[in-house]
Image 1 (cartoon, rainbow, N blue to C red):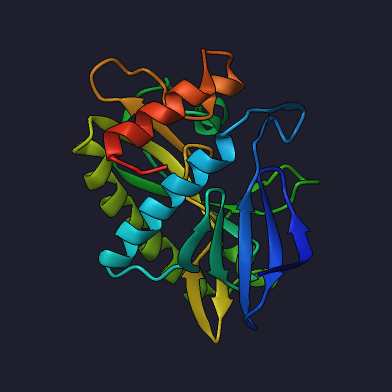
Image 2: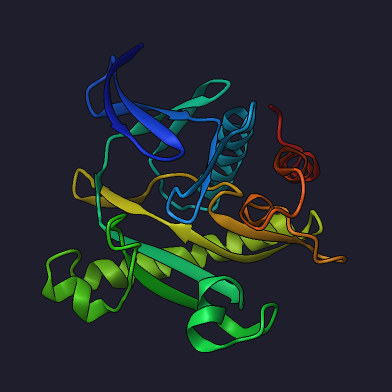
Length: 235
Protein backbone atom coordinates (compact mmCIF):
# COMPACT_ATOMS: atom_id res chain seq x y z
CA UNK A 1 0.00 0.00 0.00
CA UNK A 2 1.48 3.30 -1.12
CA UNK A 3 0.79 6.39 0.97
CA UNK A 4 1.93 10.01 0.93
CA UNK A 5 4.87 11.09 -1.21
CA UNK A 6 7.66 11.93 1.24
CA UNK A 7 10.61 12.62 -1.06
CA UNK A 8 11.37 12.90 -4.75
CA UNK A 9 14.85 12.95 -6.20
CA UNK A 10 16.22 12.81 -9.71
CA UNK A 11 15.83 9.04 -9.99
CA UNK A 12 13.51 7.88 -7.22
CA UNK A 13 10.46 8.64 -5.14
CA UNK A 14 9.82 7.60 -1.55
CA UNK A 15 6.28 7.04 -0.27
CA UNK A 16 4.87 6.19 3.13
CA UNK A 17 3.59 2.61 3.37
CA UNK A 18 1.02 0.68 5.36
CA UNK A 19 3.70 -0.30 7.89
CA UNK A 20 5.32 2.13 10.30
CA UNK A 21 9.01 2.82 9.51
CA UNK A 22 8.76 1.12 6.14
CA UNK A 23 8.71 3.04 2.86
CA UNK A 24 7.96 2.29 -0.77
CA UNK A 25 10.82 3.29 -3.05
CA UNK A 26 9.87 3.89 -6.69
CA UNK A 27 12.50 3.93 -9.43
CA UNK A 28 11.74 6.54 -12.07
CA UNK A 29 12.44 6.39 -15.80
CA UNK A 30 14.35 9.69 -15.62
CA UNK A 31 18.00 9.84 -16.66
CA UNK A 32 19.98 12.85 -15.45
CA UNK A 33 23.57 14.06 -15.54
CA UNK A 34 25.55 17.13 -14.50
CA UNK A 35 23.32 17.82 -11.48
CA UNK A 36 20.17 17.54 -13.56
CA UNK A 37 21.27 19.87 -16.36
CA UNK A 38 21.04 16.98 -18.81
CA UNK A 39 17.73 15.15 -18.53
CA UNK A 40 15.72 12.60 -20.45
CA UNK A 41 12.97 10.08 -19.76
CA UNK A 42 13.86 6.55 -20.87
CA UNK A 43 11.00 4.04 -20.87
CA UNK A 44 11.77 0.96 -18.79
CA UNK A 45 14.79 2.38 -16.98
CA UNK A 46 13.02 2.30 -13.62
CA UNK A 47 12.21 -1.39 -14.00
CA UNK A 48 15.81 -2.18 -14.93
CA UNK A 49 17.22 -0.26 -11.98
CA UNK A 50 14.77 -1.76 -9.51
CA UNK A 51 15.58 -5.28 -10.71
CA UNK A 52 19.34 -4.75 -10.53
CA UNK A 53 19.23 -2.97 -7.17
CA UNK A 54 17.13 -5.83 -5.78
CA UNK A 55 19.65 -8.34 -7.09
CA UNK A 56 22.60 -6.52 -5.52
CA UNK A 57 20.90 -5.91 -2.17
CA UNK A 58 19.97 -9.59 -1.93
CA UNK A 59 23.56 -10.62 -2.66
CA UNK A 60 24.85 -8.16 -0.06
CA UNK A 61 22.48 -9.58 2.53
CA UNK A 62 23.91 -13.03 1.76
CA UNK A 63 27.38 -11.55 2.37
CA UNK A 64 26.30 -10.29 5.80
CA UNK A 65 25.99 -6.60 4.87
CA UNK A 66 22.91 -4.92 6.32
CA UNK A 67 20.85 -2.65 4.07
CA UNK A 68 17.47 -0.91 4.07
CA UNK A 69 16.10 -3.35 1.48
CA UNK A 70 13.15 -5.52 2.55
CA UNK A 71 11.73 -6.88 -0.71
CA UNK A 72 10.74 -5.97 -4.24
CA UNK A 73 7.00 -5.32 -4.50
CA UNK A 74 6.47 -4.30 -8.10
CA UNK A 75 8.28 -3.95 -11.39
CA UNK A 76 9.78 -0.60 -10.40
CA UNK A 77 9.21 -0.48 -6.66
CA UNK A 78 10.66 -2.00 -3.51
CA UNK A 79 9.86 -1.90 0.18
CA UNK A 80 12.65 -0.48 2.34
CA UNK A 81 13.29 0.45 5.96
CA UNK A 82 12.85 4.11 6.78
CA UNK A 83 16.26 5.67 7.43
CA UNK A 84 17.50 8.93 8.87
CA UNK A 85 20.04 9.61 6.14
CA UNK A 86 23.62 10.58 6.92
CA UNK A 87 24.56 13.47 4.59
CA UNK A 88 27.93 11.94 3.72
CA UNK A 89 28.33 9.86 0.57
CA UNK A 90 31.10 7.27 0.32
CA UNK A 91 32.72 6.67 -3.06
CA UNK A 92 34.93 3.63 -3.62
CA UNK A 93 37.38 3.72 -6.52
CA UNK A 94 39.23 0.73 -7.97
CA UNK A 95 40.25 2.49 -11.18
CA UNK A 96 40.77 6.20 -11.85
CA UNK A 97 37.75 7.63 -13.70
CA UNK A 98 35.40 10.58 -13.53
CA UNK A 99 35.94 13.46 -11.13
CA UNK A 100 39.17 12.18 -9.58
CA UNK A 101 40.85 12.40 -12.98
CA UNK A 102 39.82 16.04 -13.31
CA UNK A 103 40.84 16.88 -9.75
CA UNK A 104 44.23 15.20 -9.79
CA UNK A 105 45.12 15.11 -13.48
CA UNK A 106 45.03 11.32 -13.62
CA UNK A 107 44.63 9.27 -16.77
CA UNK A 108 41.26 7.54 -16.98
CA UNK A 109 41.66 3.80 -16.62
CA UNK A 110 44.68 3.88 -14.31
CA UNK A 111 44.47 0.88 -11.99
CA UNK A 112 44.77 1.84 -8.33
CA UNK A 113 47.05 -0.19 -6.06
CA UNK A 114 44.19 -0.64 -3.59
CA UNK A 115 40.58 0.57 -3.33
CA UNK A 116 40.36 4.25 -2.47
CA UNK A 117 37.46 5.60 -0.39
CA UNK A 118 36.43 9.25 -0.66
CA UNK A 119 33.80 11.26 1.22
CA UNK A 120 31.42 13.80 -0.26
CA UNK A 121 28.95 16.09 1.47
CA UNK A 122 25.47 15.44 0.11
CA UNK A 123 24.26 18.81 -1.15
CA UNK A 124 22.74 19.42 -4.58
CA UNK A 125 23.22 23.16 -4.15
CA UNK A 126 26.96 22.73 -3.52
CA UNK A 127 27.37 19.92 -6.08
CA UNK A 128 28.35 17.31 -3.45
CA UNK A 129 31.80 18.67 -2.52
CA UNK A 130 34.71 16.46 -1.47
CA UNK A 131 35.24 16.44 2.31
CA UNK A 132 37.28 14.58 4.91
CA UNK A 133 36.49 12.98 8.28
CA UNK A 134 37.28 16.18 10.15
CA UNK A 135 34.71 18.12 8.12
CA UNK A 136 32.05 15.51 8.85
CA UNK A 137 32.83 15.48 12.56
CA UNK A 138 33.29 19.24 13.01
CA UNK A 139 30.06 20.19 11.25
CA UNK A 140 27.98 17.43 12.83
CA UNK A 141 27.26 15.43 9.68
CA UNK A 142 28.70 12.18 11.05
CA UNK A 143 30.80 11.09 14.02
CA UNK A 144 34.31 9.78 13.46
CA UNK A 145 33.25 6.26 14.43
CA UNK A 146 30.38 6.50 11.92
CA UNK A 147 32.82 7.37 9.13
CA UNK A 148 35.08 4.48 10.12
CA UNK A 149 32.09 2.13 10.01
CA UNK A 150 30.89 3.49 6.65
CA UNK A 151 34.31 3.21 5.03
CA UNK A 152 34.71 -0.35 6.30
CA UNK A 153 31.22 -1.30 5.08
CA UNK A 154 31.93 0.31 1.70
CA UNK A 155 35.06 -1.80 1.27
CA UNK A 156 33.08 -4.94 2.13
CA UNK A 157 30.48 -3.94 -0.46
CA UNK A 158 33.29 -3.36 -2.94
CA UNK A 159 34.63 -6.88 -2.44
CA UNK A 160 31.20 -8.47 -2.72
CA UNK A 161 30.19 -6.53 -5.83
CA UNK A 162 33.59 -7.01 -7.49
CA UNK A 163 33.35 -10.78 -7.07
CA UNK A 164 29.85 -10.84 -8.56
CA UNK A 165 30.66 -8.57 -11.50
CA UNK A 166 34.05 -10.10 -12.31
CA UNK A 167 32.35 -13.47 -12.72
CA UNK A 168 30.11 -11.81 -15.34
CA UNK A 169 32.97 -10.23 -17.29
CA UNK A 170 32.39 -6.74 -15.86
CA UNK A 171 34.93 -4.51 -14.08
CA UNK A 172 33.71 -2.47 -11.13
CA UNK A 173 35.48 0.85 -11.68
CA UNK A 174 33.89 2.89 -8.90
CA UNK A 175 30.58 3.42 -7.15
CA UNK A 176 28.85 5.61 -4.56
CA UNK A 177 27.00 4.56 -1.43
CA UNK A 178 24.65 6.33 0.97
CA UNK A 179 23.96 5.30 4.55
CA UNK A 180 21.32 6.06 7.15
CA UNK A 181 20.26 5.11 10.67
CA UNK A 182 17.37 2.91 11.77
CA UNK A 183 16.93 2.07 15.47
CA UNK A 184 20.48 3.20 16.19
CA UNK A 185 22.02 0.99 13.49
CA UNK A 186 23.75 2.34 10.38
CA UNK A 187 22.42 0.63 7.25
CA UNK A 188 23.28 0.90 3.57
CA UNK A 189 20.48 2.78 1.82
CA UNK A 190 19.58 4.34 -1.52
CA UNK A 191 20.27 1.99 -4.46
CA UNK A 192 22.97 0.03 -6.26
CA UNK A 193 22.54 0.41 -10.02
CA UNK A 194 24.54 1.44 -13.09
CA UNK A 195 23.33 4.97 -12.32
CA UNK A 196 25.71 5.09 -9.36
CA UNK A 197 28.41 2.64 -10.47
CA UNK A 198 30.94 2.74 -13.27
CA UNK A 199 30.92 -0.63 -15.01
CA UNK A 200 33.22 -1.53 -17.91
CA UNK A 201 33.35 -4.64 -20.05
CA UNK A 202 36.37 -6.57 -18.78
CA UNK A 203 37.70 -7.31 -22.27
CA UNK A 204 36.81 -4.29 -24.38
CA UNK A 205 36.47 -1.52 -21.82
CA UNK A 206 33.02 -0.68 -23.19
CA UNK A 207 31.09 1.44 -20.71
CA UNK A 208 27.95 -0.19 -19.32
CA UNK A 209 26.76 2.54 -16.96
CA UNK A 210 25.32 6.06 -16.90
CA UNK A 211 28.41 7.41 -18.67
CA UNK A 212 26.72 6.09 -21.82
CA UNK A 213 24.08 8.79 -21.29
CA UNK A 214 26.42 11.34 -19.72
CA UNK A 215 28.90 11.21 -22.63
CA UNK A 216 26.53 10.33 -25.49
CA UNK A 217 28.22 6.97 -26.05
CA UNK A 218 25.23 5.01 -27.30
CA UNK A 219 21.98 3.47 -26.13
CA UNK A 220 21.54 3.52 -22.35
CA UNK A 221 18.81 0.83 -22.12
CA UNK A 222 20.95 -1.52 -24.18
CA UNK A 223 23.88 -1.05 -21.81
CA UNK A 224 21.71 -1.63 -18.72
CA UNK A 225 20.03 -4.66 -20.31
CA UNK A 226 23.51 -6.05 -21.03
CA UNK A 227 24.47 -5.78 -17.36
CA UNK A 228 21.20 -7.34 -16.21
CA UNK A 229 21.52 -10.16 -18.74
CA UNK A 230 25.08 -11.05 -17.71
CA UNK A 231 24.08 -11.11 -14.06
CA UNK A 232 21.01 -13.23 -14.76
CA UNK A 233 18.71 -10.59 -13.29
CA UNK A 234 15.01 -11.23 -13.81
CA UNK A 235 13.03 -8.16 -14.82
